[in-house]
Length: 463
Image (cartoon, rainbow, N blue to C red):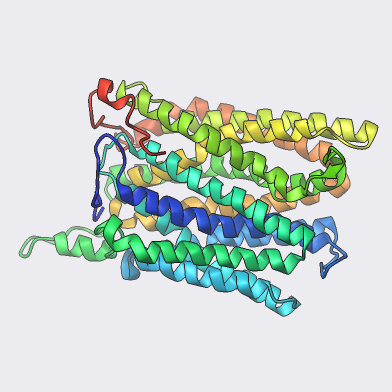
C-alpha cells in the first residue's frame, strides 16, 4: 500500500496523521449520527413539520437510507483506487454530505429526498477511503494497527455524542430542520480541519491512486504481472466475504438503536429525571459514551496481547462481539416485559443493553476495519473496504424490515428473534474461526514494534 507510514511516525505511539483522521471522522460522524437520531422521530412526528408516517413506513425508509449509505462505498472505493486517490475522494464526499445536510434543513418534501441523495453519494466517497487511510499509516504486520482502529473508533463515537446532543436537542426542542442544518455545520468543520492539515500530517498516504502506484512499481522490461489473483489472495478475499455475512447478523441487531429501540425509548421508557424529561435522542449517547470509555481499554488489551503473541484471532474477536450483542438484547426483553406490564420500562434496562452492544461493537467493528486493510490484496483494498460496508448496507435494510414487524409481533417478539439469531451466529463463527484464520495465510499476524516491556505503556499513546 502506498505511503505506508506518514510523517511524524512514532514507534512507541501512533503517527500524528491518525489524530487528523480521528478529528475529521469525528465531525463527519457528528453530522451522520445527529441526522440519523432525528430521522425516524421526524418521519413519525405530526408536529413541527414532521411527516406523520406510520412506524413501519418510517423504519422502511430508515432502513433503505442507511442501507444505501453503506452500499455506495463499493463504487467510491473502486473510483478512489483507480482514479482519484483516497484523499481527494474524502474531500469530495465531505462536500457532498455537507450540501446534503444543509438541503435537509429546507422545509420541503422534495428537498428532503434530494438531501438524502447527496448524503448517500457523499458517504460512498468518504467512508471507505478515510478508513483505508488509517491502515495506510502502518507497515504490514505492525502490531499497533488494531489499536489504531480502536482509537479511530473513539473519534466516530465522540462525533455521535456531539451529534445526538447538538442536532438531537435542536431537532426535538427547537425544530427538526434546525437539527438537520447543525449536522451540515459539523461536516464543514471536519472538512476545514482535513484540508488545512493533510499535507503536514499525512505525508503521501492516500495521495495517489493505488493503481498508479502499482503500475509505477512494475520494472521496465519485466513481464507484466497477471491481473488475476493468486490462490492465497483468493482465499483472503473469500474470508472477507464469509466474515461479512456474520457482520450482517451483528449490524441487523445493532442498528435497531436508531430505529425500533429509538421509537421504543420515545414511547415506552420512563425518561423522567427530577421532573424533567430527557430527550429521546440522548439515549443513543449511551453507546457513544461507553465507546469513549471502553475503547482505550480494548485498544490497550489488543496491543498488550499482541505484544505477547496471545492476541485472539480476528474471527474469535468477532464471534465474541456477536455474543455480547445477543446478551444486550436480553435486557431489551426485560424492558419490553416491564413496559407491557406497568406501562413504562425503567431506563436502566436500555442503558445496560447499550453497554453490552458497545462491548460487542468494540470486538467487531474496529477489528473488522483493520482486518480489511490487512487481509485484502493491496491493489483492491479500498474496493474491498466498500464490500465490507456492503454488509452494513444489507444489515441496515434488514434492521428496518425487522423493526417494522414490531407492529405485528410486538417489541418483545422482535427482540427475542434478534437475541436468538445473533447468539447462534456468534457460536457458529467461533466454531469456524480456525478455518478462517488459516485462509488468511498469515496476513493477520502482527509483529510487535518494540519488546513487550516497552509496549505496555505506549501502544495507545495520546488516545
